Amino acid sequence: MAISDNEIAALVQQVLKEMTGGAAAPASPRSYAAPAPGGSIPKTARVAMLTELKKFEVREYPIPEVGDDDILVRVEGCGVCGTDAHEFKVDPFGLIPVALGHEGTGEIVKMGKNVKTDSAGKPVKVGDKVVTCMIFKDNPDITMFDLNKKNVGGADVYGLLPDDDVHLNGWFSDYIFIRGGSFGSTFFNVSDLDLESRILIEPCAVLVHAVERAKTTDILRFNSRVVVQGCGPIGLICIAVLRTMGVENIVAVDGNDQRLAFARKMGANNTVNFMNHKGIDALSGAVADAFGGHLADFAFQCTGSPVAHSNIYHFIRNGGGLCELGFFINGGDATINPHFDLCSKEITLVGSWVYTLRDYVTTFDFLKRAIGIGIPIKELITHRFSLDEMNEALETNLAQKGLKIAYIAK
Ligand SMILES: NC(=O)c1ccc[n+]([C@@H]2O[C@H](COP(=O)([O-])OP(=O)(O)OC[C@H]3O[C@@H](n4cnc5c(N)ncnc54)[C@H](O)[C@@H]3O)[C@@H](O)[C@H]2O)c1
Ligand SMILES: [Zn+2]
Image (tube, rainbow, N blue to C red; front, top):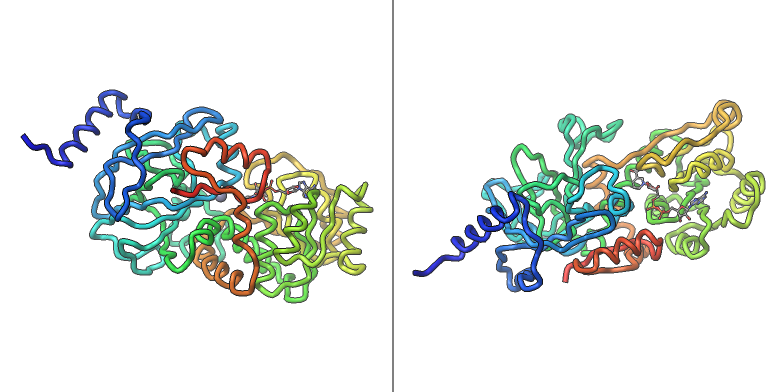
């Protein structure tokens, strides 16, 4: 009796379910299923599951039936984020076992008949390249394209979802399953961007949003003197966004000379290594010297260090502005002097956290423009790893080697 492929797939699913009580079994080395060549879709997909602290295991799961509103995407790559590293190290969200990776992109290989456009209304078809974005749970009508959102509130994101029967919920995998209907997935067609640019969309959106927040102070202008403190990926992209907007008088501050050299490549016209200046007065003096004897009009705080938050007020002139975006997660308390740092200087302070869907769309244009004017933004991706090497990828990130670490599908 001949058995069809579908029947075999159903049998495999049934057996896996019975063996594991719902959870899929670890992949055996012999059942290795790399993405199928020539556009055919395999029956199973590999996922790098974080199964315990500091341990990814490559597991294999059946690819579910694609429903009328669903999209199956073959993953091409995904950036490693500080949040992934945090989850890898301490699981602060209690998600283990979890399929991580939210800065991902890939190609639509199959989609339901009801899927016609992306979250911005742009048509989509099989073969298009896409990225996912936050899934806003509070009030999608307000947050969707609202520049003035104050906080996204309850948002989910692929790559930080609780594990379920689908399992293909993160971008550190061969395939990701984007669910339609009430699940509320958000995704964008970015076929006009190359792979590296697409991998950089998510972190760049953080800075597009931060600069939009900064603009609400009405202090940031073409000829403003701007300090960017912290030259990790976030601070470096901040410099690129400022340059792309025409802000040219930028001083970068960090303790790492290599990163400061990269800040110059991204467009900072001067740098200060805080390790070379003992005490806050010497440090603020060095920042002023770097601006030719002036303090900054505006500052972006891009480190997760409370001391750095306390320091940055000293770099800003009276009547200047500050955007604090360095604390995606709680990094502890910082001490400031409300009289000297805020009141008497009349500092305008804004906080910034993630982005809106609208910022995402702006980011596509930002990337094209940045590349167009010669900012070497793609050089931010310094290390590339395959799915089997995700433990090494995360260790590389934790060791602060390089800048942006990426998973690239083979
Ligand atoms: N607002 C958001 O939505 C959002 C999103 C993503 C990341 N973040 C936050 O942005 C921060 C930076 O992210 P990253 O990926 O670039 O991190 P990173 O750790 O790679 O970079 C931080 C940089 O700050 C420098 N630094 C540390 N202390 C300093 C000090 N006192 N003065 C000057 N420089 C100092 C370090 O040398 C390092 O180069 C993180 O703390 C992260 O939580 C915020
Ligand atoms: Zn991220």
